[in-house]
Length: 539
Image: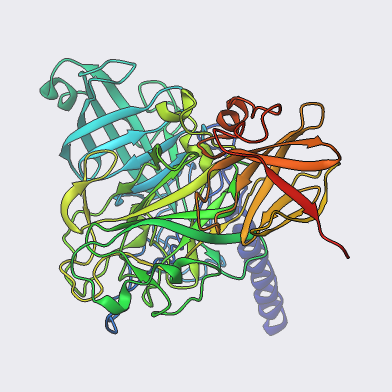
């Protein structure tokens, strides 16, 4: 009898073990891999290093910037199956049993800058939802902002449904954010508010029969002062206009030239509302990616003094980069803000790290379209301090804040401007290359440059048949840096003569269009002056 009972116990244990093993395998079924569309857009982690600091005193770090929800990303965010709480005492390898369920619909802070899974762009503040596009910008003025929906009026200049009303529903799921513009053409705010809420449980068709759109947070990276992508630095300056509240020892524009030092003191302070224009040895050009970078001097990731950035190809006509300040709180004298909410301003990163700017972002500006500003030959970069009291508005009409008021070294503290893409050096077979003197100064003419005393002119065109060169005045030149020159030359009785017929043309084309110097009149044919004789120096 004991043997029979023992045998039965063994059989029951074996059956129970098999049963438990099968149950565990059943729990680990295939993952639901459905997505909003056929493309699974990658998430972008927010890791904004933001900084800039005032050199006048040790500004305290005003706390960590707010970080987004740190959700686990286990299952696909598009799975519609709720897996329930993980607190049950089962045999699955669930890790932390109290971790947030990835399929749970949750409220999110949607303010920020995003791309979407269709290639669109979205900038969202408390007062505006802005969709910049090469096909036409769309701006929506927010009137109601709730935890999971927004009611906004379409801007009067929108290409589609101007001055109508829109409703945006949004929510979080796992580590992703989704939105649906469930209404876009309603006659009144009340009509938009009355629209049936989009179905959050159906990512594929819950947006009026269409899929919800995923918002992917955009992360902006700075560039280190020692990065090998940097090929040059600003070599000259002009129009340093000092704003209020700057002590004399900070009025040092020469400190903005050359490589960034990356400390709190080797800077020029602009003051409240002040500005400065930088010039360069060779023009900045629009190529792939960022083309230049601006370095401020903050020792903190949150104490950020901001500046707007403008560029010009003639030193007179400037075009400004769009900028967006998505914060809404005033910043005190020693306060800080979240750099993830700052876009298009210089001063977003701490000392030694530059804010990068891509000239391609200006391609649709009227000044660029009509040819006033040439993105293939940017000769001047202008930095203008933002007075951070909120009176200045960003590109979508929101107030801009930074530490205010400050004294002694108020405003933007410029360390340096770096060049990432510059006009390539051009080589020609210059028939008059050599070393000369004109009785006043020396001239060294190579296949790429004309060096006249301390001034350097980089050739961009050589016309051998008509005996002239077009050249860019280097940014370090004392006179007319960043402008253009034309050199005509001729020979008479085996003697070489030259005429710098223009030295301050605003573009290369303008320099070439200047009337040719009169070669038959060496005494007055150079704009009423005599041609200069070049005597070759002996070795």
